[in-house]
Length: 362
Image 1 (tube, rainbow, N blue to C red):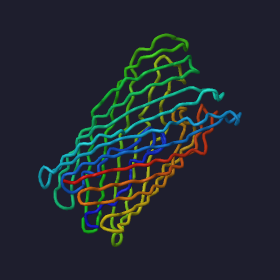
Image 2 (image 1 turned 180 degrees about the vertical axis):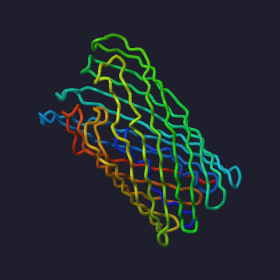
Image 3 (image 1 turned 90 degrees about the vertical axis):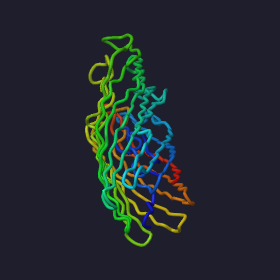
Image 4 (image 1 turned 30 degrees about the horizontal axis):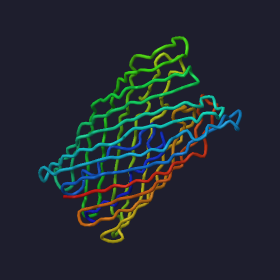
């Protein structure tokens, strides 16, 4: 138990706009920086979301499932340069959205599609003052881009070219290895992106070819991670994560108000997770955790028609010599939402995600 972190498959993500607010699909991993010795980790995830709605005034007019399945791959590597200094590199598919309203449903925005893709490449340094206290920090290269098609608005089609910006992260950790205690606080900075836009619109007052730039900010965040042994071979763990989503706004060039407001958020989000893990043998441990994100109410955007979430996740870790394999499944009750400027009601939404991590110490 002294050096064992009982893990769950955190890469088993959730539906669009439902994991940690906005369109975040995963957080930049930091747990690998606390592994003993040199370490490399490869992670996989696959998610099947189901988000659908209907017109409030005509419940028989439904959207069908507006979200698409997706998968992700991540990589992390850490090397101990000295007994006090470690260097890590991680590649993570942090942001994403896949929205596609089926055609032929009669819903006002049937046929609309949107995709966003964002990734984070981070270089992280950890310095240990002693066995108990350490600090970590580094730089983050964050990229974001996507495309959009809105047939109801003059076949408006826009491609947002990928743009990268440099941010940073900084944090501190306190550990008591004899009781498997670790508390870590990490801040990640905001990044700003100027996306070059190309496409076409027939929507007045300025039909024609699209050209220009849209600026979007990706939010700063503050994350508290904790774990502690509470009995022999038993661990309690969890996290609290705040994200400043109210700074994120993406406009569609030439579209008049209010149609130009493609992505925006009225509330920041705080996501809570807590769980318990148990080491059953030297080779196998298991864990179960629950998650919660507040339902705020009010109207949400048509390209992310969810509001809050509740989740449960079960995972297990198998360890053999220098190899550690973690797998898990997560079920998410995606929060109900009102979209289409108050005319569409999205209920009964859910997502199921599976994930696996394979790590090697050397």
